[in-house]
Image (tube, rainbow, N blue to C red; front, side, top):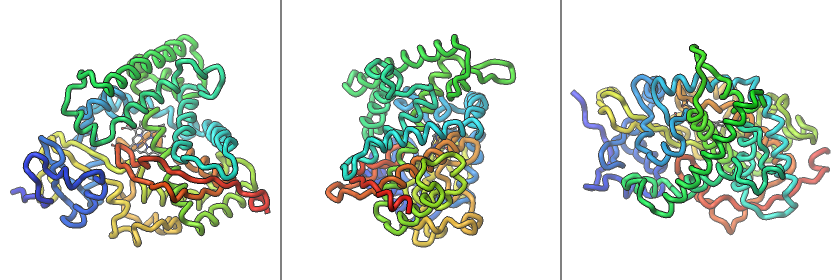
Length: 460
Ligand code: HEM
């Protein structure tokens, strides 16, 4: 016999939507605190959401993410239209084949080649900053990670004069990204999902037009590359040459979907890590001091490189702690393909199972002072004793992030490049607001003043 899953009272027709408001992450956290490890809430018209927060239940869902649980992205029509059937949105055997074909592009020895691009582009960004300048640090991180992903995906430098002003991939991708992510917040997306996408609203028209333009550009590049028949060292070259056991590669449509997916998945997430890390460092002078000491000791004033990364252990602890407090992906959602049992509770096929990094990473059972920024907690001993499936910024199981090593390398190199040259001061006139969209981002950016460190501080 199944027991009734505990959860907050719902209002007819709107369920718990009012309580969720613009802070679903906090609502989920309160539900777990109040009702325990399995909570039922109503956020959609036609199905319940079950929030799970016990490591063994999270393990069960994520490990069985292919056999028993689907990702359920077919419900998000706009996302499906932008990403098509790429790695993030596809399911079952199709996903498995694509994952196997894409995996070699992310092997450590392959992505290590991108380290120089990362520092080079970070240094180009920093060179444009003046001492004392006010800027939106999130905008800077978004631009820099976008340039890095465009170069590593397509071997295109969007600052190169030959690409400037022409209708090229960086601009087209940026346009789609802007229309999709900036114009469709989670609330508008939830409402729009109920309307036909064929409705000629200005937003729909703009999104469709930018996707059309982008498709044109991407298909041209793919065609040109296929004719060129040489490995340019970028991710696209790898995807074009990848073949399955039967010697079959990806069709142009599959390549298009994977390229779009990698661009979107690999760009804003890493920018968010960097923005939140800089935001935290600006509020923790002691941590900043220790970080600068490590950078000074390891780098001696030169730009960081791949071989420095193993020596930047405090930098790594800072990134871990920042992703604990501000996980760039704050929620993983799954849909059971059949009825599943979690203890004495039966979760029906087709419901939503929600697993939240925000909730788990701040869970008081696993982290002392869970809301405090303490990079020192990331000792070897602590990592060894931390139960699995409590800290998972990149997900886990078969659908774990394919770009996790790429992202950590990029975040480390960019953070080291920035912090050895600049001190970041928050602009206290500006409110930083968390926006839990698909990613956890600062809604109106983060305004800061950048102050150049003097050479004496750097080299003495
Ligand atoms: C700090 C940065 C990043 C974070 C926190 C992050 C987080 C995640 C998470 C949590 C998932 C799993 C989602 C789920 O299970 O439903 C995921 C999947 C994915 N990520 Fe990332 N990601 C990051 C950077 C990147 C980068 C740089 C790339 C590519 C260049 C990338 C490409 C992907 C792809 C393709 C998937 C889908 C994998 C699959 O289902 O097979 N991500 N990411």
